[in-house]
View 1 (tube, rainbow, N blue to C red):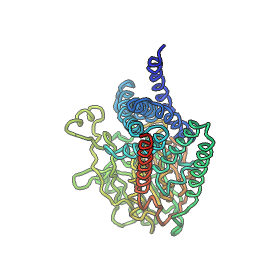
View 2: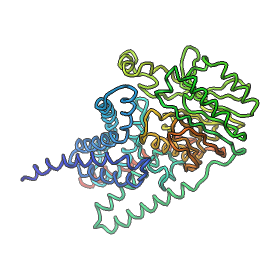
View 3: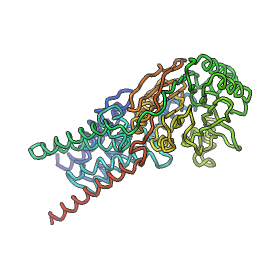
View 4: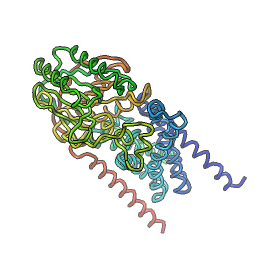
Length: 506
């Protein structure tokens, strides 16, 4: 067998290895929480990429990894498509594969760029930057999809200490750099100088992360807020059944009335009231009267009809004060709105009649609660750091999210989402009040730890207290700018070393 034939046979095996590594990628995230696997799997992928003979081979390896990662990591989307869009499992799985095929473009591009413009160990220097920048781009282009971003694996790990400074993309950069340094040490294992330098770099990176995580930018303000989070556990099939609306409203009203007397804030999940506010004026008036008499604030997930438009919204009832609203701004494509409606509308409505009818909200991003400000988000928005940051920029002293993950059944979707919510708390150093229909309903501390939570798929009320926090973290103030500047300097360094290396060869 010739050497060329051996290489030809080897690449399909390397492609298969990249696909398998990608298939294991979700294990680094919740609910499995094997955070160290993010480093191990990136180590393996970077090794495959750095030894690729051509840049297009590196791109193919990145594509195989991304395709495997998203096919396994967001397979829960098929549950919704099967149960509610009435697709058979094969067609639903094909839709997930189509999404994975799109998302895989980003890691493919990252590995192609590193391979195309850098060689040898300098490619290792560039890989972490391009890898995370590809994730950053994926969260922004075409409305964005931030799921399975590297930084979220470190939500409760030591590298997560960079979160308040650089956000989760900075955390991801540190994670990818950790893997690259390990690979550098292995490639140059015969060099004592490289071993010493590599180990020193890992220790420095770890020490900086631990030191960064110990700095507190926010401080307690005001008294603790007593909250009651209502988890209704209403099946989706019942929730949007017109015949069941009366029962659902009665169910939640009873949960409201059973809240402890010392609760100051009672929260209901996303679209807990599955009717427009204009359809139940009598009930809203009664709740306003009850709120005034019992000195409690209600935040209720309910669609809003206003100005001829419909919004996925949260309504705040504070006694007889005028109703306040938060309108969801970052909508789910093909669920809450339809891109290119003239072209794609008929197809979507064939499978899911009535969906895609919401309009984009437009702030404000906070609701006042007993002298404090709740930074609002609804469901999907909590996955986007830039969306959560909008409320913080308006002075939020705690975060508040209402969601409904009943669409995804007994899958890993809710756990993945909660992990991202915990990272938002750690980035902003603000507590998070998180209420869902079927779980995971929880209170999250400013350092991203789960304070308390309800079991999934039960009806119940989570009672607890949160301490509002004033102040801003560097990430809260500047967003991704510090991370982008650091990445830019990193790439300039790598390019400078590349030119210097090329000059020395000549």
